[in-house]
Amino acid sequence: MIEKILFIENGYCPTCKRVLFFTEDHMCQKCLESLEAIRLNRCLKCGREILNPGIRACRDCISMEYKFNRGFSAYGYDHKIKDIIYLMKFGNRPGLCRFAGKMTYRKLEKENRLGFIEDKDLIIPVPLSKAGLNERGYNQSELLALGLTSQWNVSEAANIVHSNNLIKIKETAHQRDLNRRERLKNVVGAFKITDPEKIRGQNILLVDDVMTTGSTLNECSNVLMGAGAKNVDILVFASVDD
Ligand SMILES: [Zn+2]
Ligand SMILES: [Zn+2]
Image (cartoon, rainbow, N blue to C red; front, side, top):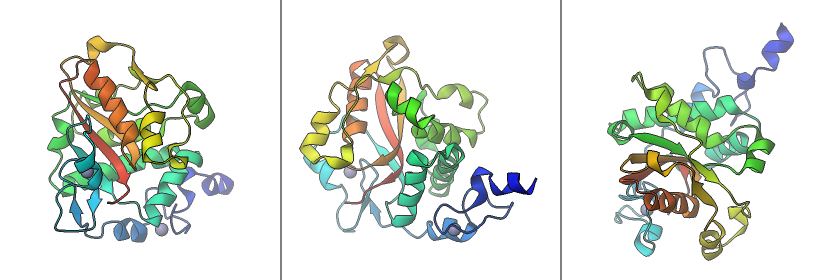
């Protein structure tokens, strides 16, 4: 029995590595509270943090014409969030991915922004390729979306997350190894809609774990809008600041 307790997924805090109490859920209270520090200005379009408080839109939103409409980002990309995202991607931590979804929901709730997810017809996670999914065993963005809607007091919440329509058909190089122009090019043609009927006329929320240049989110939005979506907004757990 003791061994089992030691090996449960939320056995230790992903950021300070302290052993967790049973009352804590995937992250210790102290680390969770430290993430709640007051944020600076947010970009009015994509939702990322802007360090210069006098500016309303980030450089990417000024220089690029993103295909999505608006964005929400729960957290900046500090070292604690980096640790969490690393474990979500490479640490075999599906429960932590769902917990990140709950954290994002709480953030929306705190900021009176629940309307941002409640007005959507569909929630679509950014997909992994088949090989990527096989390797990881789960799609962190899908679990993030499911964690988000698990907090939602609506009976059809479980059916609103659609994971098999937008698919990734091309293996892409790791975005982190590329510069901005290469990132944009890298994702072109990588995504496809399998059932455009279900996309047409829909108000869609596209969900991903992290936004850096926004190239992947932009390309997915492009494909969704091309299939006739009425609107695409994006939501990420964390984004790199401007
Ligand atoms: Zn901690
Ligand atoms: Zn922006």
